[in-house]
Image 1: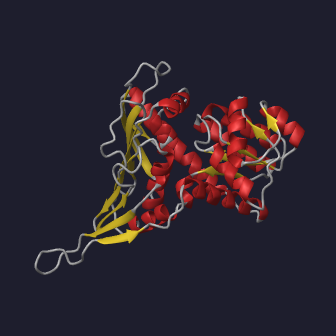
Image 2: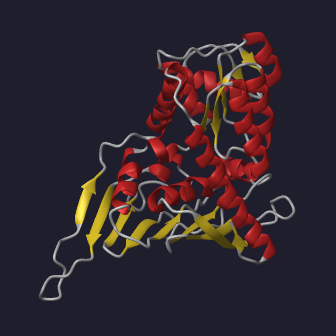
Length: 343
C-alpha cells in the first residue's frame, strides 16, 4: 500500500515528499526506483519526524505500529493518512481519534472502497432493494512467496477477518444504515507457520437492528482455494445486486488489483408480472472505466489533501472507522470464545 500511496504523492501538485521511511534499505531503494526519483531516506521514523518537520505523515505499516506512530505524528503537528485498520484495539483507535481532535489535525483512514466508483454504485443499488438485506461477501487469497510472507507478518497481530473485514463491514453498515447488534464467527488455523493462537481462515456473521444480516469470509495462504474467492452479493425483498469480478484465470486471488476490480454490476429485479414470470430483465451495469489500484490510492490522497486544505470535518469518517474495527474485533472475540457477542 505504501508504494501506491507514494506514487500518488509523487504525482500530485499538492504534495511534496520530504522523506521515505522504512526499516530496511532494500525496501526504501525499491520504492525510490519505482518512483524514478530520489528523496531523503530514513530507517528511523522518529528521526525522520525531527529532521524533515513534515506537514503530513502517511503511515502504511503493520497494525501493531499504528497507535504509536500516529500519536507521534500528531504530537509533531502533522496531519495523518493512516492505512486501515486504525489500531489493534478499540481503545487504541479511540485514543488515536482523540489525539487527532486534541491536536486539531486531520486523520484520514485508508478505506479504499469508499473512493471506488463501482462500490459507491453497488451501495446505492443495494439501498433500493428494501429491507432486510442479506449481504454475502468474501475475499480469499491463495498466497505464496512474498505475499505469503506479508500475510504472515500481518497475522502477527490480527487475523484476516479483522484486517480485511473492516472494509466489508463498513460497506454493510453503509448499505443498511442500521445499527449492528450482534456478531458471531467461525475460524480455523490451517498452518503452523503462524504465531500461537492465530488463525488464517475465518467467517464472521453480523445481524443488524433492522433484521439485515451479512457474512464476510477471508482466508490467506498457499492452501486456500480460488473457487468462489470473490463473492460480493446483496439480496433484498425487491431483488439482488452482485459485483462481477475479474474473469476466472485473468488474475490470481493474491493480486491486489483483483481485490477491488469489477467487470460489471448485475442487478436482478424480483417483481413478477400477471403471468407469474419476471416483469423485468436483469440489468448489467458496465464498470469498464473504473480506476486500478494505484488510481484508487490517488483518489484517497485527493480526499486527504482536500480535508487539509478545506478544513473538512472528518468526525463521521473517524467514527465509522472505529465502529467497523469494533465489529470485526467482536467477531474475533466470538470465534475465540465460541459465543455470540452482543454489540
